Amino acid sequence: MARRPLIAGNWKMNGLKKDGRALAAGLAKLMKKEKKPAFEMLVCPPYPLIDRVVEAVKGSGIKVGGQDSHTAVSGAHTGDVSPAMLADLGCKYVILGHSERRTDHGEKDALVKAKAEAAIAAGLKVIVCVGETLAQREKGQTIAVNRRQVRGSLPDGADAKNTVIAYEPVWAIGTGLTATPEQAQEVHAEIRATLAGLIGGEADKMRILYGGSMKPGNAGELMAQPDIDGGLIGGAALKVEDFWGIAKSC
Image 1: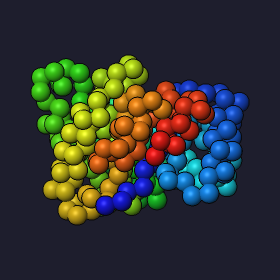
Image 2 (image 1 turned 90 degrees about the vertical axis):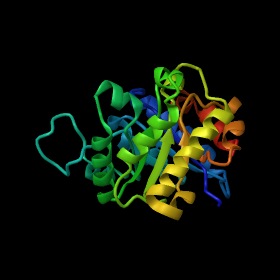
Image 3 (image 1 turned 90 degrees about the horizontal axis):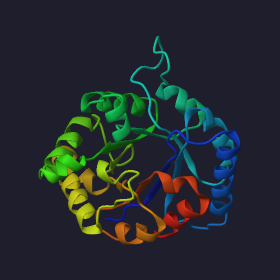
């Protein structure tokens, strides 16, 4: 079944005002030249840059997203951002359950699920992240870990229109290490099989992104795999030429 690739850039905690504008404007200029892009493009800047990035990509077809959001619409939650706030700024997506949130902030599957349900209720599409650590892979727990995280993190009411899954092997994030196309495909296929057990035929339509050190040099081979439907890009998303190179590999 044809699934339109999603090329999503997670800028993480990078970029000041001028950097964000320049990066977004550079991508928008290239995107406007594409008559019928074979991919959907998304950029997820830090919160302070969202409004500037939304303005810079206006009319280009590039979507903007947040990197996290709270379960509540509003309230006494110092330092947090609600999904309604992201939507109000012009965001269409939000990344949830990224390994850095799970590790740095102790987020568990149940919280990721609750955040995803709140974000969908606010009109956002969610990118739910799952993935194993190096220790878990070495113990042969890769499939079990990803199955558990998908089952525990998938929001109620998830479908191909409101939910994307991102497989990010934690050992390949920011390390320069990358799962081989065969390793990545094996896990993506298992994730899709797990989804099928949860949402039936909708699993064939849902996009599953690869998120572990994807670069222009390896993107084409990774995305040629039958169950890899794009990428959640970190470091390479901070350079126009690299991010665009990944997108064009579609």
